[in-house]
Length: 218
Image (cartoon, rainbow, N blue to C red; front, side, top):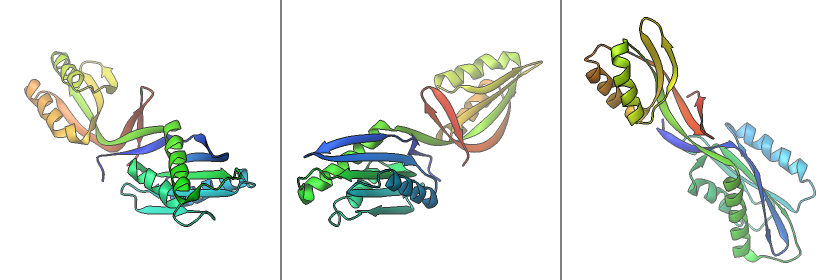
Protein backbone atom coordinates (compact mmCIF):
# COMPACT_ATOMS: atom_id res chain seq x y z
CA UNK A 1 0.00 0.00 0.00
CA UNK A 2 1.42 3.37 -1.01
CA UNK A 3 1.82 5.98 1.72
CA UNK A 4 0.67 8.64 -0.75
CA UNK A 5 -0.21 9.11 -4.42
CA UNK A 6 -1.54 11.78 -6.77
CA UNK A 7 -4.95 11.45 -8.38
CA UNK A 8 -7.69 13.55 -9.98
CA UNK A 9 -10.37 14.82 -7.59
CA UNK A 10 -12.43 16.49 -10.30
CA UNK A 11 -11.76 16.36 -14.03
CA UNK A 12 -12.06 19.15 -16.56
CA UNK A 13 -11.48 19.98 -20.22
CA UNK A 14 -8.81 21.99 -21.99
CA UNK A 15 -8.34 22.86 -25.66
CA UNK A 16 -5.29 23.71 -27.74
CA UNK A 17 -4.95 24.65 -31.41
CA UNK A 18 -2.09 23.36 -33.57
CA UNK A 19 -2.03 24.48 -37.21
CA UNK A 20 -5.81 24.94 -37.15
CA UNK A 21 -6.42 21.44 -35.72
CA UNK A 22 -8.42 21.50 -32.46
CA UNK A 23 -7.32 19.17 -29.67
CA UNK A 24 -9.81 18.88 -26.80
CA UNK A 25 -8.62 17.01 -23.72
CA UNK A 26 -11.31 15.57 -21.44
CA UNK A 27 -10.14 14.31 -18.03
CA UNK A 28 -12.06 12.06 -15.64
CA UNK A 29 -11.16 10.29 -12.36
CA UNK A 30 -11.88 6.54 -12.60
CA UNK A 31 -11.61 3.66 -10.14
CA UNK A 32 -11.94 0.76 -12.58
CA UNK A 33 -11.43 -0.14 -16.21
CA UNK A 34 -15.21 -0.31 -16.65
CA UNK A 35 -15.51 3.32 -15.54
CA UNK A 36 -12.72 4.32 -17.92
CA UNK A 37 -14.33 2.59 -20.90
CA UNK A 38 -17.73 4.10 -20.09
CA UNK A 39 -16.17 7.58 -19.96
CA UNK A 40 -14.40 7.02 -23.30
CA UNK A 41 -17.66 5.93 -24.95
CA UNK A 42 -19.43 8.98 -23.54
CA UNK A 43 -16.83 11.33 -25.05
CA UNK A 44 -16.91 9.50 -28.37
CA UNK A 45 -20.68 9.98 -28.53
CA UNK A 46 -20.36 13.61 -27.51
CA UNK A 47 -17.79 14.27 -30.26
CA UNK A 48 -19.14 11.77 -32.77
CA UNK A 49 -18.15 13.96 -35.74
CA UNK A 50 -14.51 14.41 -34.66
CA UNK A 51 -11.61 13.15 -36.77
CA UNK A 52 -10.14 11.18 -33.84
CA UNK A 53 -10.92 10.39 -30.20
CA UNK A 54 -7.67 9.06 -28.79
CA UNK A 55 -7.44 7.92 -25.19
CA UNK A 56 -5.20 6.76 -22.38
CA UNK A 57 -5.88 5.65 -18.83
CA UNK A 58 -3.87 4.41 -15.86
CA UNK A 59 -5.53 2.71 -12.89
CA UNK A 60 -4.25 1.34 -9.61
CA UNK A 61 -1.87 2.46 -6.89
CA UNK A 62 0.98 0.99 -8.94
CA UNK A 63 -0.55 1.67 -12.37
CA UNK A 64 -1.54 -2.00 -12.69
CA UNK A 65 -3.91 -1.23 -15.58
CA UNK A 66 -2.62 0.87 -18.48
CA UNK A 67 -4.32 1.22 -21.86
CA UNK A 68 -4.11 3.67 -24.75
CA UNK A 69 -5.37 4.06 -28.32
CA UNK A 70 -4.29 6.10 -31.36
CA UNK A 71 -7.81 5.83 -32.84
CA UNK A 72 -6.61 6.03 -36.44
CA UNK A 73 -3.68 8.40 -35.96
CA UNK A 74 -0.26 7.04 -37.06
CA UNK A 75 0.87 4.37 -34.62
CA UNK A 76 2.56 5.72 -31.51
CA UNK A 77 1.72 9.39 -32.15
CA UNK A 78 -1.26 9.82 -29.81
CA UNK A 79 -2.19 7.16 -27.24
CA UNK A 80 1.34 6.32 -26.07
CA UNK A 81 2.44 9.97 -25.70
CA UNK A 82 -0.78 10.64 -23.77
CA UNK A 83 -0.11 7.71 -21.44
CA UNK A 84 3.50 8.85 -21.01
CA UNK A 85 2.28 12.23 -19.71
CA UNK A 86 -0.07 10.57 -17.20
CA UNK A 87 2.69 8.28 -15.93
CA UNK A 88 5.29 11.03 -16.01
CA UNK A 89 3.14 13.28 -13.84
CA UNK A 90 2.41 10.31 -11.55
CA UNK A 91 -1.37 10.73 -11.71
CA UNK A 92 -3.24 7.56 -10.73
CA UNK A 93 -6.81 6.46 -11.50
CA UNK A 94 -7.42 8.79 -14.42
CA UNK A 95 -8.75 8.53 -17.98
CA UNK A 96 -8.07 11.13 -20.66
CA UNK A 97 -9.62 11.41 -24.09
CA UNK A 98 -8.13 13.84 -26.60
CA UNK A 99 -10.56 14.72 -29.38
CA UNK A 100 -9.09 16.06 -32.61
CA UNK A 101 -10.82 18.06 -35.31
CA UNK A 102 -8.49 18.14 -38.30
CA UNK A 103 -7.67 21.64 -39.49
CA UNK A 104 -6.43 20.81 -42.98
CA UNK A 105 -2.68 20.86 -42.31
CA UNK A 106 -0.68 17.71 -41.56
CA UNK A 107 1.37 17.96 -38.38
CA UNK A 108 3.82 15.14 -39.03
CA UNK A 109 4.79 12.45 -36.52
CA UNK A 110 6.66 14.79 -34.16
CA UNK A 111 3.95 17.42 -34.35
CA UNK A 112 1.26 14.93 -33.43
CA UNK A 113 3.24 13.63 -30.46
CA UNK A 114 3.77 17.17 -29.18
CA UNK A 115 0.14 18.16 -29.71
CA UNK A 116 -1.38 15.14 -27.96
CA UNK A 117 1.12 15.41 -25.11
CA UNK A 118 0.45 19.11 -24.65
CA UNK A 119 -3.31 18.56 -24.72
CA UNK A 120 -3.08 16.04 -21.86
CA UNK A 121 -0.80 18.37 -19.89
CA UNK A 122 -3.31 21.20 -20.28
CA UNK A 123 -6.21 18.91 -19.39
CA UNK A 124 -4.53 17.78 -16.18
CA UNK A 125 -3.53 21.36 -15.35
CA UNK A 126 -7.17 22.47 -15.62
CA UNK A 127 -8.36 19.59 -13.41
CA UNK A 128 -8.14 19.43 -9.63
CA UNK A 129 -5.27 17.14 -8.63
CA UNK A 130 -4.96 15.99 -5.03
CA UNK A 131 -2.42 13.92 -3.12
CA UNK A 132 -4.03 11.09 -1.19
CA UNK A 133 -2.08 10.18 1.93
CA UNK A 134 -2.46 6.99 3.90
CA UNK A 135 -3.13 7.46 7.57
CA UNK A 136 -5.06 6.35 10.61
CA UNK A 137 -7.61 7.86 12.93
CA UNK A 138 -6.41 8.22 16.51
CA UNK A 139 -8.74 8.68 19.47
CA UNK A 140 -7.16 10.38 22.49
CA UNK A 141 -8.74 10.91 25.90
CA UNK A 142 -7.09 13.08 28.51
CA UNK A 143 -7.84 15.23 31.51
CA UNK A 144 -7.85 19.00 31.23
CA UNK A 145 -4.25 19.33 32.40
CA UNK A 146 -3.04 17.28 29.43
CA UNK A 147 -5.05 18.88 26.63
CA UNK A 148 -2.77 21.91 26.28
CA UNK A 149 0.30 19.71 25.80
CA UNK A 150 -1.48 17.58 23.23
CA UNK A 151 -2.76 20.59 21.31
CA UNK A 152 0.79 21.96 21.24
CA UNK A 153 2.09 18.71 19.70
CA UNK A 154 -0.69 18.72 17.11
CA UNK A 155 -0.09 22.40 16.30
CA UNK A 156 3.65 21.85 15.82
CA UNK A 157 2.91 19.22 13.16
CA UNK A 158 0.00 20.99 11.50
CA UNK A 159 -2.50 18.36 12.65
CA UNK A 160 -6.09 19.29 13.37
CA UNK A 161 -8.78 17.46 15.32
CA UNK A 162 -11.58 15.79 13.37
CA UNK A 163 -13.81 16.23 16.40
CA UNK A 164 -13.54 17.08 20.09
CA UNK A 165 -15.75 16.36 23.11
CA UNK A 166 -15.40 18.19 26.41
CA UNK A 167 -17.09 16.54 29.41
CA UNK A 168 -15.41 15.46 32.65
CA UNK A 169 -12.46 14.73 30.38
CA UNK A 170 -11.46 15.64 26.82
CA UNK A 171 -11.89 13.26 23.89
CA UNK A 172 -10.13 14.15 20.63
CA UNK A 173 -10.14 12.32 17.32
CA UNK A 174 -7.28 13.16 14.97
CA UNK A 175 -6.00 11.93 11.63
CA UNK A 176 -2.34 10.98 11.41
CA UNK A 177 -0.27 10.41 8.26
CA UNK A 178 1.25 6.92 8.37
CA UNK A 179 4.82 8.21 8.65
CA UNK A 180 3.98 10.29 11.75
CA UNK A 181 2.02 7.69 13.68
CA UNK A 182 4.56 6.18 16.06
CA UNK A 183 6.44 9.42 16.67
CA UNK A 184 3.33 11.44 17.55
CA UNK A 185 1.98 8.69 19.80
CA UNK A 186 5.33 8.60 21.58
CA UNK A 187 5.32 12.37 22.10
CA UNK A 188 1.78 12.32 23.50
CA UNK A 189 2.64 9.49 25.90
CA UNK A 190 5.79 11.28 27.07
CA UNK A 191 4.23 14.73 27.44
CA UNK A 192 1.30 13.40 29.52
CA UNK A 193 3.40 10.93 31.53
CA UNK A 194 1.37 8.10 30.07
CA UNK A 195 -1.89 9.49 31.45
CA UNK A 196 -3.55 10.02 28.05
CA UNK A 197 -5.54 7.14 26.66
CA UNK A 198 -4.78 6.39 23.02
CA UNK A 199 -6.87 4.17 20.79
CA UNK A 200 -5.95 3.42 17.18
CA UNK A 201 -8.93 3.75 14.85
CA UNK A 202 -9.55 2.81 11.24
CA UNK A 203 -7.05 3.31 8.43
CA UNK A 204 -8.00 5.56 5.54
CA UNK A 205 -6.68 7.80 2.80
CA UNK A 206 -7.11 11.54 3.17
CA UNK A 207 -6.36 14.68 1.19
CA UNK A 208 -6.91 18.42 1.32
CA UNK A 209 -8.74 20.30 -1.42
CA UNK A 210 -9.56 24.01 -1.19
CA UNK A 211 -8.77 23.91 2.52
CA UNK A 212 -11.24 21.05 3.12
CA UNK A 213 -10.16 17.72 4.57
CA UNK A 214 -11.38 14.78 2.47
CA UNK A 215 -11.55 11.19 3.72
CA UNK A 216 -11.46 8.11 1.50
CA UNK A 217 -11.74 4.41 2.28
CA UNK A 218 -8.62 2.30 1.83
